[in-house]
Amino acid sequence: VLREEDKFDKQLFKEKVKAKHKEEKRKLKEKKKMEEEEARDDFGDSDSEGDEPDLSWLPDPNKVYGEKTQEEIDQLEDNFNEDHDKRSVTKTSNRNQQKGAKKRKAEQEPDKKKKVNNKKQKIKEISSKLSVNEAEELAMLLLNKN
Image 1 (tube, rainbow, N blue to C red):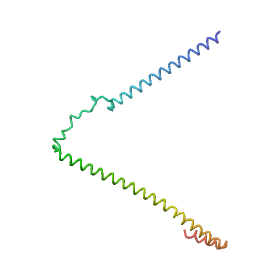
Image 2: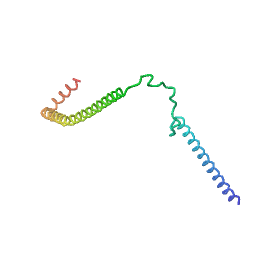
Image 3: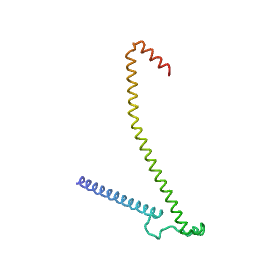
Image 4: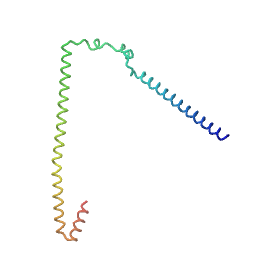
């Protein structure tokens, strides 16, 4: 009878511990949610228009720089567009130059391989004609050069 009561008590204890842990997790989640909302509010991430920063302290640009006529505004826009067009042309030409350089490099690689193969072939021909003693002397000379 005591063993059954012990089992029952253990079961109740486990359930209480689980409930306590669940409650702690729930509270922690709520706390994190609240902190995130506060952080959003602090950084002005809300969508309402009333939360825009107060710019009344800034000087009036028309007073500082003077009022611009429509002709001056059009001229500034044209200058901006010309600069933008020049930049885009420059970027395009740079890309084309890079592509051309890559193609030339790819074309030069087979030439390099041919040169290496030719050198290896010459070395094989020379070394096949040499005796063992001559090959050793040549190796010693090459090693002493460095």
